[in-house]
Length: 134
Ligand code: MN
Picture 1: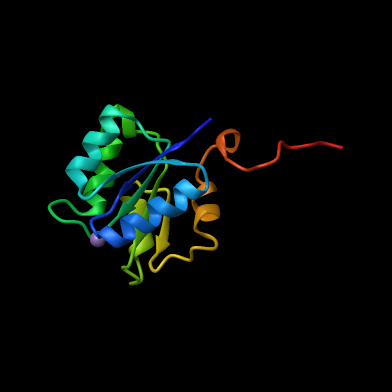
Picture 2: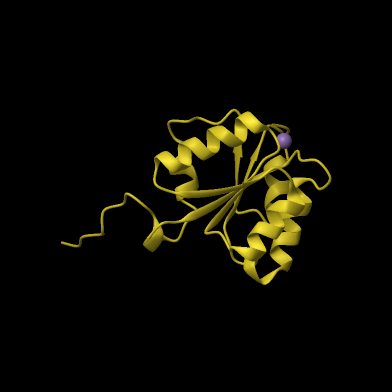
């Protein structure tokens, strides 16, 4: 099963880096450079997870998360904020806006995919051995 990740990020190099990393790990990536286009993509093709920049033009990431939670296609999708805001309280603000997690930039490319995989339902996590019981 191939999982689709929607990346909403306005900075080209960051978007390409995320896309590269995720595709290398077998995810399918759809990307948008701003919130309104990202929300439209989520409507037409509901993703399995959303990676959301906070500092975006026109709508900030908090507003995008709130809007995604209002549409049926976005109500239950895991949303992980990826933000360079390292101020105290940013995690709380992201969670209050409807995000499930918060990762600070610059991302750690060695652990990034593992960090986001935690937000996927266990049954759909890639590269995970089936649970075995003694
Ligand atoms: Mn940005």
